[in-house]
Amino acid sequence: MPTVYSVIRRPIITEKALITREMEGTLVFEVAATATKTEVKQAVEKLFSVKVASIRTSIVEGKERRRGRFAGYRPDWKKAYVKLKAGETVPDFVAE
Image (cartoon, rainbow, N blue to C red; front, top):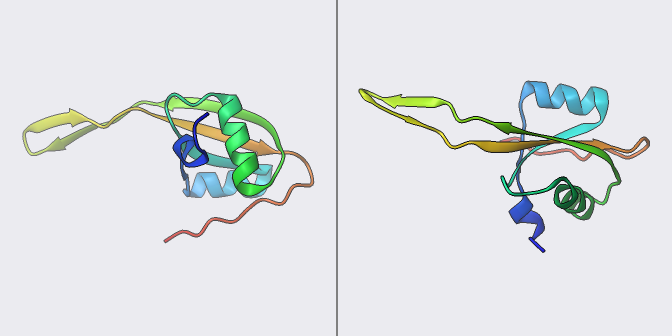
């Protein structure tokens, strides 16, 4: 059984993610590429003490990045949209 912090890498704090959190009660996380929906659900429920209604995941392909004439790709990563059950309080994240 993986630990909570090996499943959830970091919260996604972008303008789109913050609007999704406020309007729909959905949290957005970067998760481990090998994490399943069940593991993500258990990790979020344990970490934030909330009940999860549903989870959607997507694989984000890495972008091409250049340093002068040298080109490479950033690694692919996995994103999880975690919808909380009705009546649950949405936890706040501290953005630095």
